[in-house]
Length: 350
Image (cartoon, rainbow, N blue to C red; front, side, top):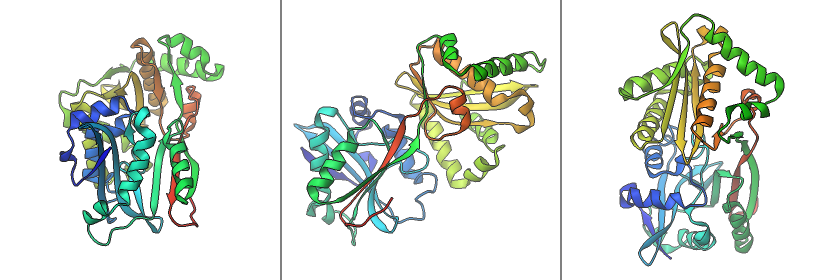
């Protein structure tokens, strides 16, 4: 494999990137070219704007064919200079290397050798050095976990791995009633009861998927509903608003945005923002007008979202990171994302 260090996303063809991703060990919206580029432009909504960061974007080719991408950046983190995955940490739920299973192990071995080479060091501003890798949000099913452990042992690195966050998911088979039958009985009745009560309220409750005809207005509407939650309002500082706008725009432009609203009394009272990707819905964020809590707008809208996913043959609804209680009430079953820290030094902690 021939490895190349890129100084900018423009040096890799976006279609070639996404084609490789479609056959990669981990194919998620967060690894799409357009998402990664938007994240890097805004540095995760300001998460890394005040840090000294440098893009370390590496591709590998074999017989001129793109076979692997390592979307990385270097920054001081936890008191050490580490290589992190682009998208780390807070707003990108699943991250990984972009490479097919057959090429994965040797791509990682060659990548680590390349990152330590004089060729990479010479192309970077001084001082340039890294103490190791600190990779967040690796799916618990990723072969990168075992491969990094093996590489660390071979290189004499200290290796630590931890379960970072749960990612509850609901398997779907096209039958909404069958799905409801798998939900705990009390919660199943709550879902149905709240939906019936909202529909019978006489307040014109209805839900619909946004047509995104006025993209900026729809984004404003969604962010406005998010801000009804005090915690989310604090999260949406100016840099994060710019990041969220960029993510929503690019998801819409590339065909994997799925945004739904619930209305009552002629106004929007809830929103559910998902990514419709790889035949599943990925639940990215939501917002609720808290002046309408007597209608249980969040529950009602989520019930409609899940019914749509069943009727439209989506295989799964992924709540993504977080252990909020409602995810389990709707039948979410935990999987996890992991954090791996592989460092050249002998004493590290997570």
